[in-house]
Figure 1 (cartoon, rainbow, N blue to C red):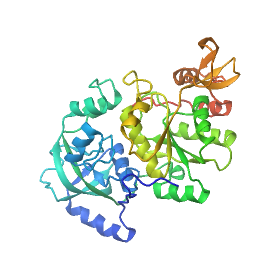
Figure 2 (spheres, one colour):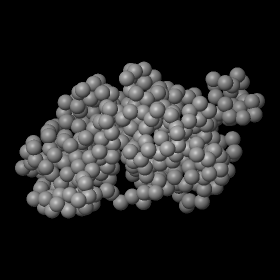
Figure 3 (tube, one colour):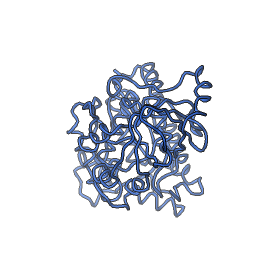
Figure 4 (cartoon, rainbow, N blue to C red):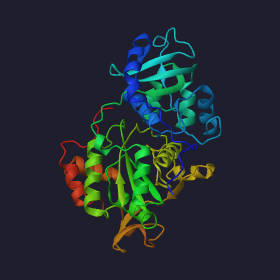
Length: 384
């Protein structure tokens, strides 16, 4: 069966349409703060249940429990604090119990009922969440640029953000209905921030051999420099699914949320999100949500042993390569041959080839996918 939402209930914090005009008028009397896109998408994900059981930004008790125990204060597994950072000037005069208006680029999107305003230690956050205080880590760098205070409290979404990828967007309530209509009892989620290469395809198809359906769910939002652009990822996957997947075996949908590059902690966070979409299983590959050399290659798999109550089954896969002796794609679990026969499917090498205008070999990437990527002047993020 489709998995139960994390915490037991799929959260919905969206204002009824018939009350929106009244709420918008009331915001004229409220203190308002303008938030960046990352925070705005966090609000949408809370509102539509992607971050269930969160109903808003975490209060200090939950924040502390997540940092030290990787659980909410009620003991539900949760590994990444979803926070709203503000400056003292922005919330001057605001008291606990007040309601404030939240805007993005000057447009009102939500209200926040303030439960708590508290200070935080950015280095402590970095040390526990990212396991490093090094500002060269992209997540740590972003942490150090945040404001001095955190505000915790429930949100209510009033207006959705503009979404250029709306036709690729499904909410958890919608995917759950769709999975049931398809008759899928087991659904495996696949998280990605990359355009697909042969290794990704074989990971997904290996899972599909014993799971009813595959949910490919790339993250659309902030990523580090030289990662693939969102539109390129979507176009590449559309092509791969069209030419190389059985009809009705795959559901493709995006989630707008930033990559956090938190390695093992983020692997759990990604699994929880896909559980809320209805997945029963979740693929965890090599160096999931990793960056640089901050995490070991399989630490993101090992952390799942600490969460027997997670409620979604992780599928651990080894790195795939092309074996010239086997004559196909394999991994170390099934291929007995030595390194001399193995062609590593390197994402870094594929990027370098694409940047120089070369088509990656078919042992690394499907030619149709490569052509789509190469059709873009620059398929990679240039500035962050």
